Image (tube, rainbow, N blue to C red; front, side, top):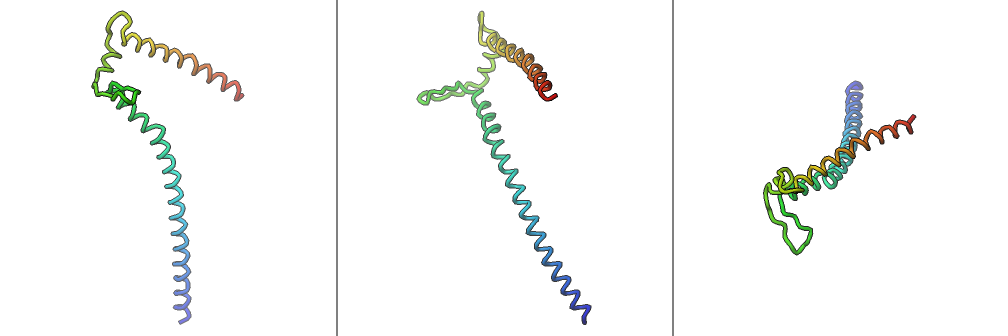
Length: 121
Protein backbone atom coordinates (compact mmCIF):
# COMPACT_ATOMS: atom_id res chain seq x y z
CA UNK A 1 0.00 0.00 0.00
CA UNK A 2 2.83 2.39 0.76
CA UNK A 3 4.47 1.70 -2.60
CA UNK A 4 1.22 2.56 -4.36
CA UNK A 5 0.98 5.88 -2.55
CA UNK A 6 4.55 6.73 -3.43
CA UNK A 7 3.87 5.87 -7.07
CA UNK A 8 0.84 8.14 -7.24
CA UNK A 9 2.74 10.94 -5.51
CA UNK A 10 5.61 10.61 -7.96
CA UNK A 11 3.28 10.51 -10.94
CA UNK A 12 1.46 13.58 -9.61
CA UNK A 13 4.79 15.42 -9.30
CA UNK A 14 5.75 14.29 -12.80
CA UNK A 15 2.49 15.65 -14.20
CA UNK A 16 3.04 18.95 -12.41
CA UNK A 17 6.61 19.19 -13.69
CA UNK A 18 5.45 18.25 -17.18
CA UNK A 19 2.84 21.06 -17.10
CA UNK A 20 5.46 23.58 -16.03
CA UNK A 21 7.80 22.41 -18.81
CA UNK A 22 4.98 22.58 -21.36
CA UNK A 23 4.12 26.14 -20.30
CA UNK A 24 7.78 27.11 -20.58
CA UNK A 25 8.03 25.54 -24.05
CA UNK A 26 4.90 27.36 -25.22
CA UNK A 27 6.21 30.65 -23.84
CA UNK A 28 9.56 30.16 -25.59
CA UNK A 29 7.81 29.24 -28.84
CA UNK A 30 5.64 32.35 -28.62
CA UNK A 31 8.69 34.53 -28.03
CA UNK A 32 10.46 32.94 -31.00
CA UNK A 33 7.48 33.54 -33.28
CA UNK A 34 7.29 37.15 -32.10
CA UNK A 35 10.95 37.73 -33.03
CA UNK A 36 10.45 36.02 -36.39
CA UNK A 37 7.26 38.02 -36.96
CA UNK A 38 9.10 41.31 -36.47
CA UNK A 39 11.67 40.18 -39.04
CA UNK A 40 8.95 39.23 -41.53
CA UNK A 41 7.20 42.58 -41.07
CA UNK A 42 10.44 44.50 -41.60
CA UNK A 43 11.23 42.39 -44.67
CA UNK A 44 7.77 42.99 -46.11
CA UNK A 45 7.88 46.75 -45.52
CA UNK A 46 11.43 47.45 -46.66
CA UNK A 47 12.09 44.71 -49.25
CA UNK A 48 9.04 42.93 -50.62
CA UNK A 49 6.72 45.93 -51.10
CA UNK A 50 9.30 48.13 -52.91
CA UNK A 51 10.34 45.18 -55.10
CA UNK A 52 6.77 44.44 -56.14
CA UNK A 53 6.04 48.15 -56.66
CA UNK A 54 9.09 48.48 -58.94
CA UNK A 55 8.02 45.47 -60.98
CA UNK A 56 4.58 47.04 -61.36
CA UNK A 57 6.09 50.40 -62.36
CA UNK A 58 8.33 48.74 -64.99
CA UNK A 59 5.28 47.80 -67.04
CA UNK A 60 3.49 51.15 -66.64
CA UNK A 61 3.79 54.64 -68.04
CA UNK A 62 4.09 55.77 -64.44
CA UNK A 63 3.18 59.29 -63.46
CA UNK A 64 3.88 60.86 -60.08
CA UNK A 65 1.16 63.40 -60.80
CA UNK A 66 -1.97 62.23 -58.93
CA UNK A 67 -4.21 63.87 -61.56
CA UNK A 68 -2.70 61.82 -64.40
CA UNK A 69 -3.35 58.09 -64.03
CA UNK A 70 -0.61 55.60 -64.84
CA UNK A 71 -1.31 53.45 -67.88
CA UNK A 72 -0.17 49.92 -68.67
CA UNK A 73 2.29 49.84 -71.61
CA UNK A 74 3.70 46.32 -71.34
CA UNK A 75 7.29 45.84 -72.50
CA UNK A 76 7.70 49.27 -74.12
CA UNK A 77 9.91 50.53 -71.27
CA UNK A 78 12.25 47.58 -71.81
CA UNK A 79 12.28 48.14 -75.59
CA UNK A 80 13.26 51.77 -74.99
CA UNK A 81 16.03 50.78 -72.58
CA UNK A 82 17.64 47.96 -74.59
CA UNK A 83 17.01 48.78 -78.25
CA UNK A 84 18.87 51.63 -79.93
CA UNK A 85 16.92 54.53 -81.38
CA UNK A 86 18.47 57.77 -82.59
CA UNK A 87 21.77 59.55 -81.95
CA UNK A 88 21.66 59.44 -78.16
CA UNK A 89 18.52 57.41 -77.69
CA UNK A 90 17.08 55.97 -74.54
CA UNK A 91 19.18 52.81 -74.88
CA UNK A 92 22.41 54.82 -75.12
CA UNK A 93 21.48 56.68 -71.94
CA UNK A 94 20.67 53.37 -70.26
CA UNK A 95 24.00 51.80 -71.21
CA UNK A 96 25.86 54.95 -70.13
CA UNK A 97 24.12 54.83 -66.74
CA UNK A 98 24.87 51.10 -66.46
CA UNK A 99 28.55 51.67 -67.26
CA UNK A 100 28.80 54.52 -64.74
CA UNK A 101 27.19 52.36 -62.06
CA UNK A 102 29.61 49.50 -62.72
CA UNK A 103 32.58 51.85 -62.71
CA UNK A 104 31.45 53.39 -59.43
CA UNK A 105 31.03 49.95 -57.86
CA UNK A 106 34.41 48.73 -59.14
CA UNK A 107 36.18 51.77 -57.69
CA UNK A 108 34.38 52.35 -54.41
CA UNK A 109 33.99 48.77 -53.14
CA UNK A 110 37.72 47.85 -53.16
CA UNK A 111 38.64 51.29 -51.81
CA UNK A 112 36.16 51.03 -48.93
CA UNK A 113 37.26 47.44 -48.24
CA UNK A 114 40.91 48.51 -48.09
CA UNK A 115 40.15 51.44 -45.76
CA UNK A 116 38.03 49.17 -43.54
CA UNK A 117 40.82 46.59 -43.31
CA UNK A 118 43.38 49.26 -42.45
CA UNK A 119 41.16 50.66 -39.70
CA UNK A 120 40.50 47.17 -38.33
CA UNK A 121 44.19 46.35 -38.06
